[in-house]
Image 1: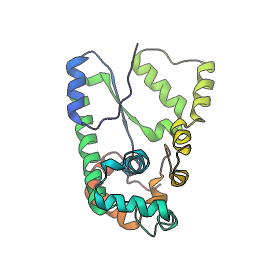
Image 2: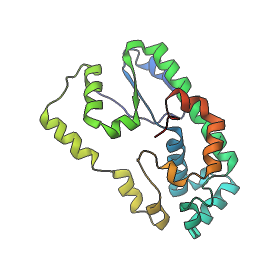
Image 3: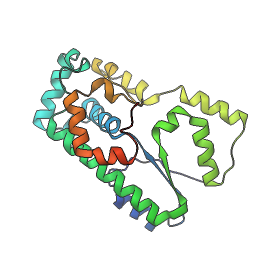
Image 4: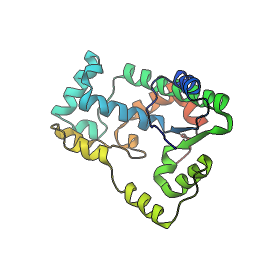
Length: 207
């Protein structure tokens, strides 16, 4: 059995491509709180994709590099409103479209996986996925390996070696990191743009 993990920037279209090329595949779709997803995308752009940012967004990036404290204290926003609104709408569109297409095209070979569940209960979540894939539940040795793996964060380690000191101040691969960096206005804007999808996938429940 072989697999591939890919980010999906193409939404439902990617699901249709997958069904056309691998009609007998199983699809595991990982959904993550859109506010964390968009924050991760912003951090990625700040670190090594500044060429994807417009002029106003590059100014925000430069201001953060020069004086990060107002951003860390949520007195200034990491986002321009236009960028955040577009990113929120794109997240909602891609998630809703991908899940609908996955259920339609793959039926019982489609599984929706919550990123937060993988973090909270990794072995239990993976055991369910292994059963779904028909490869068995694993054993104590495998559980120990999963536990060991959850303690590593290679992406954060790699970004930590960046020449930019500001990288150390930004969360990578964690749940709820958006709460520490979104201003009140950011959170409100995101809910206006993508609140229905947040609600649909239970991300507006009290934490």
